[in-house]
Image 1 (cartoon, rainbow, N blue to C red):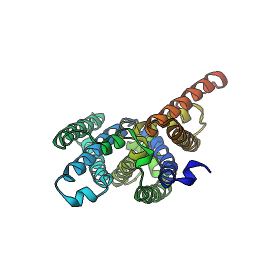
Image 2: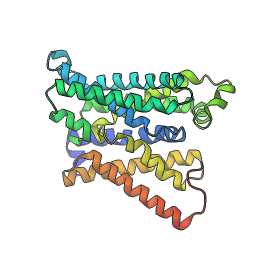
Image 3: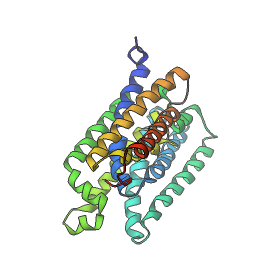
Length: 282
């Protein structure tokens, strides 16, 4: 019997990984097109601050000790995503400053909370680097709920997201209500990043959003094909990474990312030897 059919913790990890392998690349395509690839790093660091805050409060309160730290991480992540959108309006001519500002704030808060909690513990290491044994059944249902919300949002807002991703100003001029759409997009991106922590890890979650897209745009002939290829590459890397993680006793995040790197290298070589289409043009 395959391991993930035998042990509950591997069932949880497999189901969560499949859903994350779908969610992250789908949103990643829009993020890469908007040239905000580093936003996942910023939100992952602010999510770490939320998780560290929950673990710190858990030392003083039984309520937080019993609570799943990922929920406070999600709250911090969504707050950081909304704050990034507000900062983009403040720095209209230097919008890229919003991302390092939030990233710096997240790192600073994380260091403070971790030091107040007397350093790292096993739970925090699981969030940093990913661990398939740390995924609980409640995490599966949480990610499933996020999956439903994200797919519905992308399905109904696809045209608007497409226009705003390629030309935000043109989208605004055409009458698209860009403010709430972009805020909502940032919020669900934050939720997906927070939900991916147990599988990939905080330090590596951005790779799951960007590397499948980087591989797909090498060979895709259009935007929709880039989305499908990104999801395919994401799922392959997640499944292969979890199997390698289990059999080789390695951190799941690292193995998944290395699988993504292999896929990216293969796509680069494939394009170099078979295609002449310009790279990165969807």
